[in-house]
Image 1 (cartoon, helix red, strand yellow):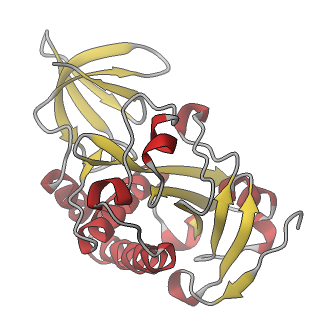
Image 2 (image 1 turned 180 degrees about the vertical axis):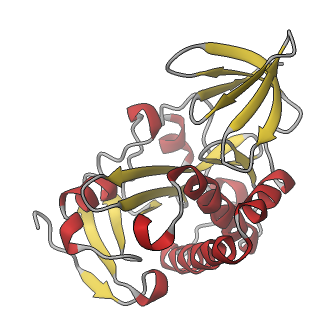
Length: 255
């Protein structure tokens, strides 16, 4: 292992391990490199993340212990959770965690959590093809200050828990809540199936009834957002009435 963790304890999901590092370039990248030594439910956390990645290779760095940076290992064969459904399941768990800290959030397809129209958390899920392990990267802006927020390069402005509530938070406490809530949300998915996730998403859908433009690898489509389908796809109806379905894409809200 190229980096040494400072703490290892059975506080991951389902009593698996939580490995805490002082600094990593990226928790997802470390997990990919060391996947053969990791098991279902293990969590990798970095107090400082110097080269975190979001979708489309956007930078999600976290200096000075200001953000919560996690990667969770999910065995795809064991869990039978698709990559597409893991993103909304995790977003719902983050939304519920924020609510416990008195912050109201909404869900933006496919992987963002929004507060007051600003991004407070993002998720990046990657599959390691040789082991059927899903690596679920979670980044939550916790105590990041206004100057650092202004320097973050994202299509929509970011925010943090501190910016929303005007006080700092115990990141360890936030971490405990996130992992506990994620475990419960995944278990509800096991028990109640995809319709449970779909219903929870619709209750807190940031894009509901909005006109959007979505850019995918193949095209840019503009139309009315019709919600997330039960399989995790986004549905949009263009001006001609034609239906379009997307597994992924970059969304712009239109006035």
